[in-house]
Image: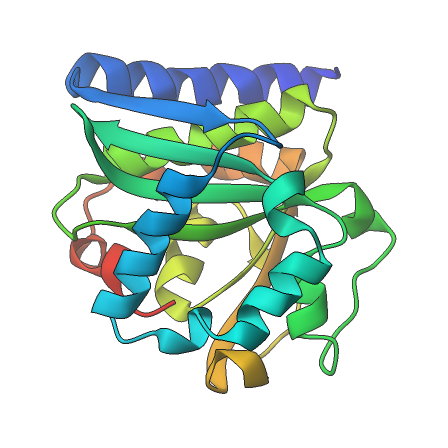
Length: 222
């Protein structure tokens, strides 16, 4: 582990410590690959239906996840407040889900092969404070560093793009991609190596400022 990773781990552990100190009733559970993901699946299924995002639950969407063995290869991060599940995040090594979804637009580079894909960042309510989501992301990023990954990639809507960019990810493509399997919605493809994330976290305004878009960015459309 190089000096960048060590410094970044300090920042990430600091976010997790802040979560524990400021919101003692919050905790993050980590389900390693191969674990029972039933609670995760029920949570996202309920949220997708509530938000009328049925395209996320079609047989075509399920078939893609099955073909890529997403559930069995992924690590899942579950954020609880007391005993209530309030947010989730999934981390998946290559081959990435986004590579199949966006194959008509862009293909993974060799460098991205050593990244981990963050997906399914979704919350139960818009009322949860940024510190709790920061703690969830920090837990997942530290996990990825410890497993030897070299960075993070993500395919997301504009609201999640704002969040990921504060975390240091930057767009790979210069424009939004229209993803057929996601109701031809506008999606952004992002990535970052650890040094880029460290640079972003070294500017506290990126992660600590309570900007207006925090009010609803977590429960907008996926």
